[in-house]
Length: 133
Image (tube, rainbow, N blue to C red; front, side, top):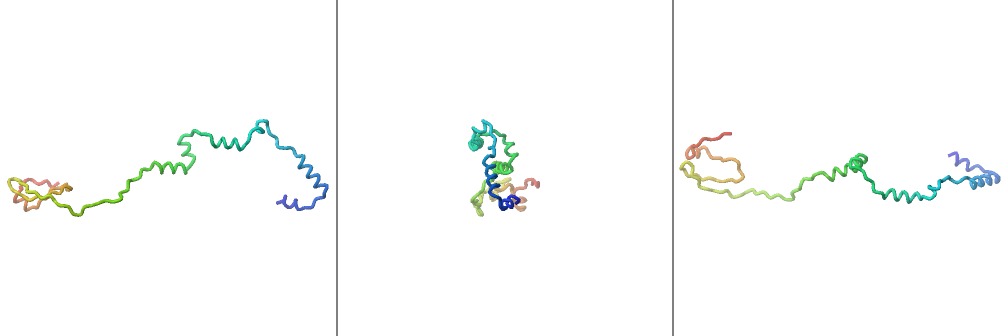
């Protein structure tokens, strides 16, 4: 802000001429022979295009975003089922079965894990021990 105010102060022509002379004769920035022969933009371009060997742990440790993307890429997704057909009705297999010499009508349900019989059929025809477990 002070510079802005100072620039508004009118200066005499002699002071302005002296100021211009100082700016003209100001020493140039010092550079070594090596830095004078190197173009900064070219060095930056080469630096950005140089392959860099890093461990996965180093990369993931430095960047939360990279760690998140890595996690997403290795997550196992469950297969989505587009359509499931269920049968509400199916024909039962009907057989004549002989147990202890007695013929019984039996219905076979291939999906069942239990054998079920009415108490009357058991007392009249089967008469074998029952497993209540």
